[in-house]
Image (cartoon, rainbow, N blue to C red):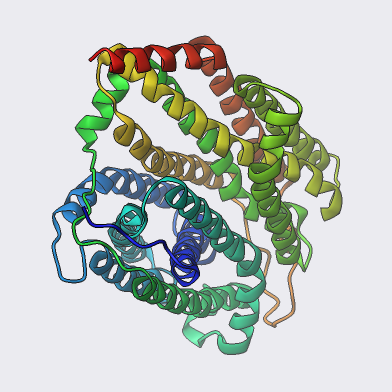
Length: 489
């Protein structure tokens, strides 16, 4: 059997940089494509909702197919790195094309452009995302080394997401003003100056992100040396649904994950509109960046510190921690709604509910993974079959499914709310976009952004409480029974 030498510091850094670049790209697409096409280019919100829903569901089902393709690949460079590099190069180009839409394009042509580029983006992202995570066994020895590398990569992915969340709406206006030029005469009726600035700013910002993405992936491919004989386990859609149908606890956890993620993603899709059209101000993008900075940092700290504190210091079991987390999120949403409705327009107090919501999201990231792991032994005891790889492959599937559903809901809401830009000043002066937006539209935005997620969280809580039976004691009992069953074989 081939023995892999321990992964050195340079290899860890190289692999971690790949996660930074990968999630920079993912966050840019996930957080801003709706805003870019709907708010800046003027595509119908309903059309964008349909595009995003179909594309993400297609993308989720495409994952297992790409897994099979990668598993069957054999080259002198290995099976993972060729697809990682090909996927990155094509995805970077498609990403740029998404945010460099021809400004003269409109109507059905623009809708077709958005649909084609976004679906292609999803396919090419899967092309590099599957081999990136699947290649870990190809250059680690397993055990603690593999676990630590996975943790490092997840943390680096969080850094990549945070970079985009923090910097996008600060850098985009700067680049747009610097390099965007003036609005062409034939487009002045369509693009106010501020929209033209954002349109061009996104193009140049995306070019920078795409170049960094390619550079980081190249460093990953150079810095890691995969074994030639590593096997890759893949799960088909049929395998996933079979595991869910035959494992009621896995079904319970997956539905809970989907509903909780939909609730969070609805808010993440709409929060930029809240800052721009509700809180307003000429520097709304700075407040938005600060909110994302604090929220992103809180989510990471919650995973690293809050969950261990609740588990080890407060001695709460995992189910009680989950209840505490849901309660925190609901309180945060209610606080955000009350503050906004009361006319609070100072960003500082708004950070308090934001911290509660994102701390809950961080704890949920950990606790849901624990619950999903608990269903593996339960399924083995019930069905005499261990579906570990199949069940954990569902995490990517449900995240993408949740993303599509939430984008569709947010798009329908935006269409109904009919948020309007203020009149152009025909200058580069900053504009308060909240002026001219009706109070009814503002209140509707607040309610969709808070009350709809609250309803989802309450449903998830009731669903989970009624159906989930794997308490800490039950998990230990099942583990003992599984061990006894194995020893008796």
